Length: 299
Image (tube, rainbow, N blue to C red; front, side, top):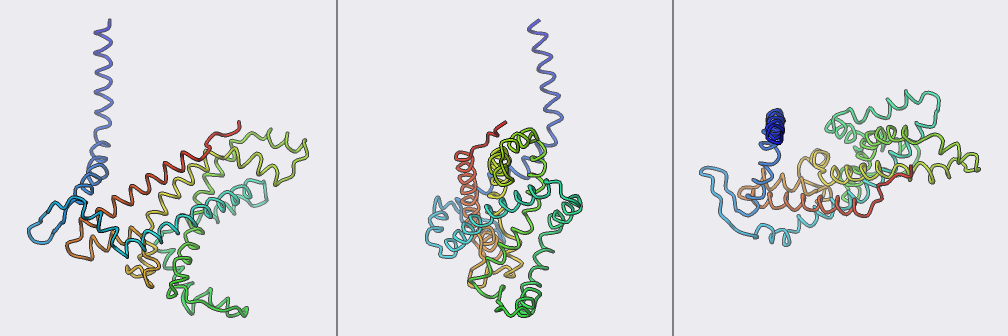
C-alpha cells in the first residue's frame, strides 16, 4: 500500500513539475539568472567592449560607493522621494476609496475617471506634466492669471524633485484606490450600523472601523509603494533628459545605475554593485515595514 501510494505521489509530483517547467525556465532566465549575474558583476571590474574582461576586485566596487558623491546624492534623493510619496499616495488612495464607497451619486463615473491615469503610459504622463510645468505651461499661466508668482519647475533644483513627486502621487494613488475599494466591500456593514446606534459620527466610524479593518491592505499598499518608489527611473530620466539635473536634484539610484552601466565605459561592475545595494535597501525597508505594521483586521 505504501509502495503504491509512493508511486502515485511521485507520479503526481512529476506531473506538477512538468506543468511548472515552462514557468521555471522563464523565472530562471529572466529573474534568478540576472540576479546571480548582477552579484557576480558587482565583485568585478568589467570591460564589455572588444574582448570582454572580468577582473576580480572583491569589495572595491562597494567601497567606491562610500566615496562617490553622486551616489550619496542619488541615495538621498531616492530616500526623500520614498518618505514623501509613499505616505501621501497611501493616504490619498484611502480617502478617495472611502469617498467613492460612501454611496454618492455618480460614483461609478468618478471611479472610472480617477482610474484613468493608471491606464496611461508613464512616459506619456511625464511628457504631459513637462508641458504643464514649462515656464509658459498651463500651471504657470494659471498662477500668473490669479496674480501668484510663477516657478521654473523643470530648472530649479529646489523644485524639480517635488514636481516629480506631485505627478507620481497623482498618477499612482488611483491604482491603490481600487485595491482599497475592493477591501472596503469586505468590511461587514453591521459594524457601521452598530457604531451609528452608539452615536458615532462619520469621522469616528472612519478612524475606529474603516482604518483598523484595512490594516492588511494598508500594509500591502505600503510595501508595493516602497518597492515602486525606490525604483524611480523613467520620470526622472525624461524630466532631466537622462542627466539627473538640474544640479543632480532628480538623480535617483536607478538612474545612476543606468548612467554607469550604459553611459560610462568600464563601470558595469560598479553599476551592478549599486543595483545590489538598492535591492538590499528595498529588502530591509520591506522587512522593517512588515515587522512594525499590524496586519490583523478587527473582524
